Length: 81
Image 1 (cartoon, rainbow, N blue to C red):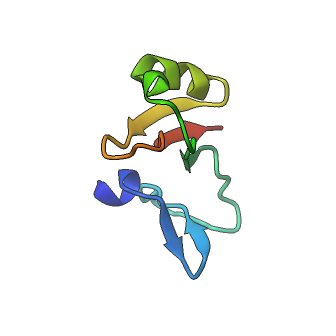
Image 2 (image 1 turned 120 degrees about the vertical axis):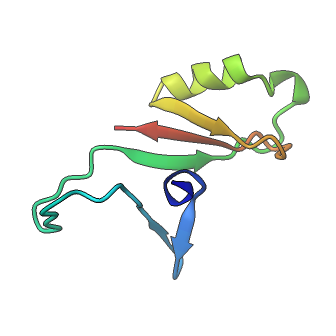
Image 3 (image 1 turned 135 degrees about the vertical axis):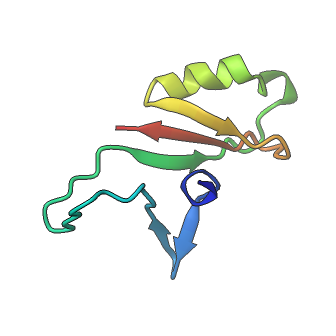
């Protein structure tokens, strides 16, 4: 499960999308429906580093998955379709 949520994964300077396995998977016909992205908000003032505020910002394009508690730059993970 860590591989699905602890990204972003970058291989040879390209983002790697990781999804749960699907039986009879065919890459030629598979459509990506959701993209998970790490978003950084540089120089975000501490008073704006609030989960509700970040959820509101994320809701404009998707859904908040996780906030990096160690980040002082407002790094967060969001998914959108």
